[in-house]
Length: 251
Ligand code: 5RP
Image 1 (spheres, rainbow, N blue to C red):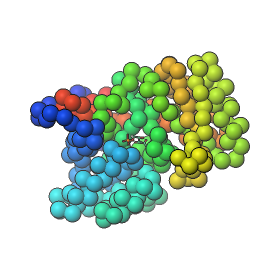
Image 2: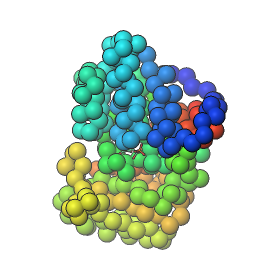
Image 3: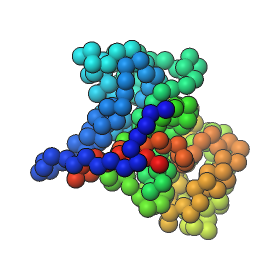
């Protein structure tokens, strides 16, 4: 397992206006510092993880990294990695990974996460759970005091069969905290279908989830629920880029 500092701040150079993409790239570059030749790597999904994959492709091309092999967490990431000639494998072939690097939608002070707004939560959770180290890359807008606190979606992947039945059960489960459950739709208004041919019910919380472990367990008990976007006690380290620099946090 890799070792990370409990807290490390690296001040950014005084760049007048860093865009959100600049920050994502800063976090991605810092995470790639932990990649060594010969590693089996989990390749995340989303705009921040895409910077990681780009960088890996570049380092392979220039010979600064050799013999790495990646397990993509979505069809999108698989396509990107293939276009960069990053060798790929599967969890079946390599059930233990050295390091997975991925973005997140929310990061709480205990390094618990909400993931899956990009729809890849199931493969992400499988790959990241199988990894000896899991490093999260994010810009500072992802920091929350409690999960669900951004008021944006907390995804739950459900089978297509009787999805409405499960949407109602999820809505009922969080009725007391005023959460709303909605089927995720494409821009064309059709149900969003995941890489695993399932649907996504997004939960919108009024207030942060008080007990993430209990919430995750309750959701997981529902028949027909495939996975949820609460990634609890999974991150080894979080690399957060903000206007003042990059911070590496681990527990
Ligand atoms: C995809 C994810 C992403 O990691 C998450 O949505 C963050 O994406 P981005 O880096 O584009 O903000 O969980 O399922």
